[in-house]
Image 1 (tube, rainbow, N blue to C red):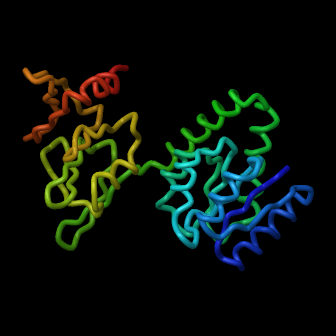
Image 2: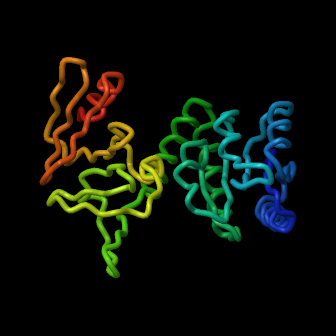
Image 3: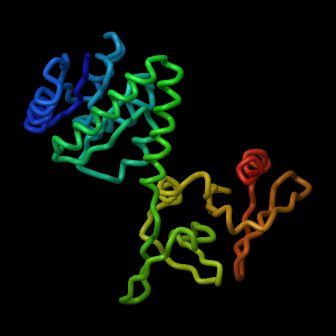
Length: 254
């Protein structure tokens, strides 16, 4: 079993190597590699490993960008000090996402997931399908269930299920069915989109994300654009472009 380790902090790398050797003494460990440059060179010139343990923040960039570019077929276990990369990580072939300092029990559980994949799905097609299922389940757990908003000195928690849409004005707002709108702490709709379940929320355009359960319908205009109707007081105008109309219709179809 060949395992490649990507980690730019020497002490963290040494700790991770000790844990892996403790749990899997027969595995062949390669690395650690500290940079995207080293990792890119290794992955393009060497046979693919069976598993990759990767820190997200390397010395010269984010390993997620590397994997999005190279798209390795082998599973990846990510380690990081920051949990806000979780959604992006699960879009890659990741089977787990461990926060530093890595705990031996959490690492062991990640290895058990990896072993299950290999044992029951040695066929690459079935392996890929199972990994996609695991990623989907883990991503569902990682989606936000509520947003905190501020009004004066008060802080309110708004469950995701009560949010009709998010809009971009000068700031990012969330809207509720009774017409209330709140300023969020998010810096962009791109950031909001990463936090939401794409089966329930749709990026209608650059200024708006809508939730499916609050849609009442849509109307096509002469140009092929869709005017989306929302169940709320004083709804904003939401237009879906002609280019995105087919994808939007497919998304709302049960």
